Length: 200
Image (cartoon, rainbow, N blue to C red):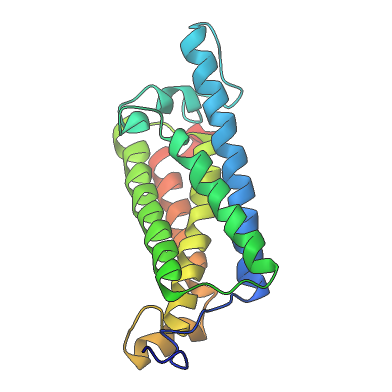
């Protein structure tokens, strides 16, 4: 019989701040994905349709959606975002009402947000250095995934969901604000270095 007193066996609740982060990112991610899906459907149905997020030669959703990178699995990437972010919002509601999740569910959540982060990093490099255009709604999703990945990882380390050396856990959990700040800073520098005045 398993020992339910061990951290690995006990269901693990989430702090309110993390639950709210999951809810906000889930809701906004669903919205961004839905808007992108609508624009994609309209552009396929009507070649003359111009998405509202086509702002200039750099900020152009249409240029990104028409690439193979925007349809990596053979269909528009945003169709993955709608159910994924909606499920995240639903999970957040459960956590806010006091639910505690088994370790395997936390591991699944961490694996999901880590996969999303890796996918976003890849898309960023493709948009910057291959496609040569930025999708504003995609950038909203990038901005959501960065803190989502970071704070879920921090909490998984703090609670022992992800085993790690104590020194690493202490370093990461002592300065939890640093991760998103550094990642956002790197992203801004890369975008400005690549496009500069062309953004305006």
